[in-house]
Length: 154
Image 1 (cartoon, rainbow, N blue to C red):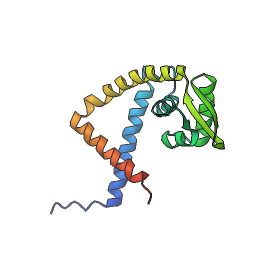
Image 2 (cartoon, rainbow, N blue to C red):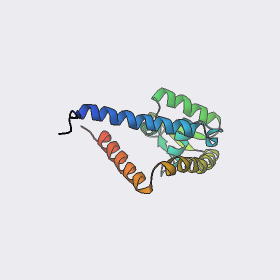
Image 3 (spheres, rainbow, N blue to C red):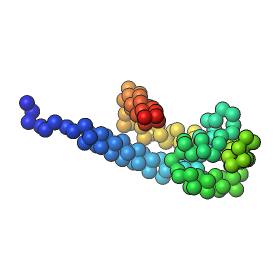
Image 4 (tube, rainbow, N blue to C red):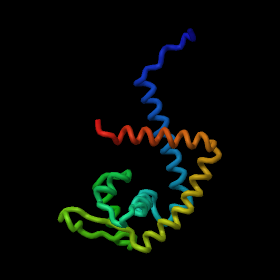
């Protein structure tokens, strides 16, 4: 026997979460302070990036809300600012008078691509020295597994 007390599953889960959260915050702070986000804040870029991945071009505001890290009211205000800057377009959902559809404008798509290229280089500069390709694949596998578990109905 090692003499070390058994680790509680609750304690291990809490320490794992705290480590994951703190690592994510540290990486996000470094990325936000980088040159890629001088023209656009990270949360604004997140909206443009999410819209850029929508196959139809249009996405409901509530679906966008499911994929970004903002509250509904904050997202609505952010979308208004992006619309005023000519980066997104919105229209009422034809099948639902209360729904709103969003899409990137040409200017929004171009800015997303421009920032995205630099953002990917910044990510690589942070991640590659810290984790081997094998470790990156394992982290990707584990975070995807965690997201699927959290997203599945209980």
